[in-house]
Image 1 (spheres, rainbow, N blue to C red):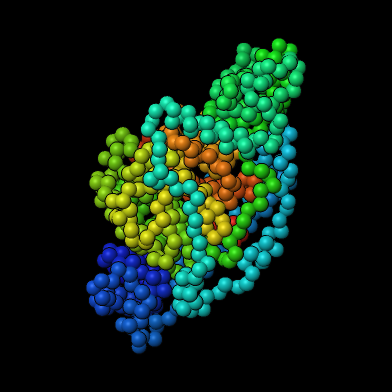
Image 2: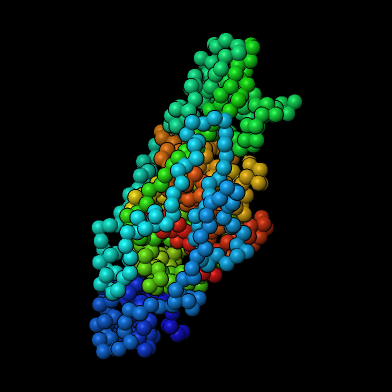
Length: 560
């Protein structure tokens, strides 16, 4: 097989058990006979070598005049990416398209916020406008052209790289499954989310409201215990706090009635209103979700650096898209991708075993450990200097209940090729001052099933993500599609607002900005399976969202 493209060089070396530096791939591809050069490099590599470096290539090609660091075209034949089209917010509501009718190979997103005014919330003033060009000039500071392999090595080894994990609960699980454990989990949820709401309303506990006089103004913060409609078409919402429960009536002719269909059981919210004459019920005037403040201003990296956001690779499936993956990993070795220093993988590395009925009929690899071994081989194809963070998903060999601890030591050892950061699901990952909330996304099924189609759908998964940000919890409803493990601390609360919210699971590509938070669902690397066809899932496969950490702009590249 000819080795004229970086992806084929990378794949050939990975098949032989080697990882490889990006510049080494460039040097091999630029020789007069890449296949012969690769053979010589491998033959002359020391026995203990696991990574092919620039020095290995140069040691066997000192006199080849074609060895250089010229730019290698990407897999489409273009030596440079097409100029992206920038989408700006305007007075007219406009959301980024995610139906993939237009070519998504290179699109830049700077989306308007999703509007949702609920009651009179003090922190809901419009966020200050930002001059995009001034911000870009300030954050980038100067031209980051790279003129040599030495510059590249100096950059990737610099102390500027920084990753911090804020909430890895691996090895810290305390739940035994007893009733008291669930009580602690929901008490922690209430206490932390009620703190976010406490500054917006003059609230009182349920027991105190029950003792107030009829006609008094009152407000309560609680977890939603029940939501039901009355015979007259109004809505009765029962809130519960640590002192008891109290009902609130939302009249159908009130503007806030439009938001009742967004309320999920077990989420935390505040309701303000007036007590009935007999003080037995609260007539609601406003609803407050914990929400992301409209005044939220994100942080940025101090230099131009990028991260690739992917998920749902599903190695082991007959429908795993090996060629698309090789195109992606090969492109990462080109000069066009030299600013990509981070790879964030949001779960489902492998297809797993026994995840859905008759899955065995759709497996290419039936042994779970062999699936992870093959995934590790594919991971060797990406540049060895990438910093990789990965979390598990519902197809991975970890517990299904969330939060999910990271992989055990045996699986970590199998996937040790890149010394990846393997953490729990969800994970708050700080990448050079940019907080990325990584969550696989099982609860998106719940949100999409419970909310009206115009507010949440599989075709626009980022809109379902907006509701998780609004509720400040990645899995607010208990007892449905999403399994929740009881812990002393509710690790699923979104206590700190992230700059980026990255999910997968639903195999659909979608992105947009909600109150200045970029929400991205990154699609998958698995073509449609028979099971997906039976449940009407048409996946968006072979896409890689590329995030500029210095501006929070995003491009999406297609490799299938």
